[in-house]
Length: 440
Image (cartoon, rainbow, N blue to C red; front, side, top):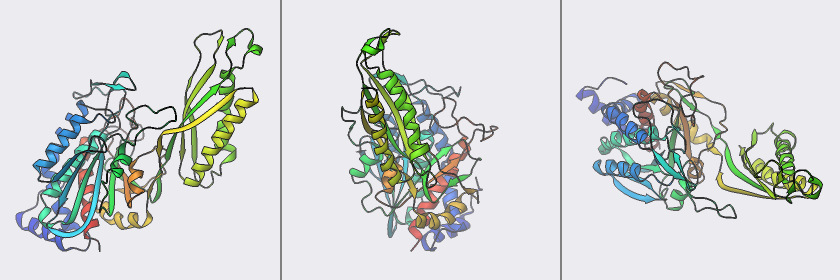
């Protein structure tokens, strides 16, 4: 973090925020001083949220913590937005545009094995089962950074030329309830917040994701498709049960399902034009049968499709149906395919917003910003990008002394971060917001 400013230089920096056409070094100094002042709080917030993780749609404690903080800052606060979401609105002292900053709040149904003194010991209810809960994707850090950015910008509100919305989103990790028989669930996460009107009057939105797999303090970005769209797949293969000793008297759904799994791999390898964009089909679960010598009536397959192009996505969805149904029918079985409840669009950074935002991002990062390859993971930040231009980027924060190339990735039980990068994230978010408001 940079050194504190003198009173004279701080006054000049504040004036720069109000009058510069884009964010400059003086304006960044004012933001940096405000972020530095709140840095110890960000560590405390992150550790508190980390020790008390909450699953998708259950972020009650986290939402209360956020809402109380935003109210203390004098922001207009809405709670219960799209479920447990919280929105704080900061109106600057000068007229201008409206920009939004977003952080996700939910944790994962998995154990933590970091050995941290504030490691999670929490349990939660997931799809009717009690499970361990852990912040193994860094959303605790996202919340702390956005709380820090909110406090920093609230302290500069008199010079702020416009309005900033701070969006704290629930359920990024997925549906908080089970799908019905048609694969449908009520809207959740970013989509539910959009439907609740959270982007009213917003002209652009920014968000970041922390990762241990980039160099420390490095911003990773790219224009165009950044993260894959995601569709969950359920395939129900119906056969005819019988004795394992006489399969000719049955229709074996286990064999049919196995052939479907293999056949689906040809959708990507032989049917999609992957010279345009990459794609992935993975079957992650096969459930069926109860005993070694009993042929069951049915088998259920669960999987995921990842794509970076909407046309390829629609093509792949149809080919998955055709492949599964045809292969099953070839052995006398039937396959029923449904998609959802997860259906995230591609996270795509518009070229114009990316180009316009890069100077401020690089300034805030001290020049540490790099173009990264496409990421096959998915993010429902894409739901916001369907409505307004949005820019999403990654922040490198491997634990101290750990090679970023070997650090446990997001969703690992050993996932951890360098808390010294919390101010870096808050500074970059605040800088991007101010820069957007200043641009003509």
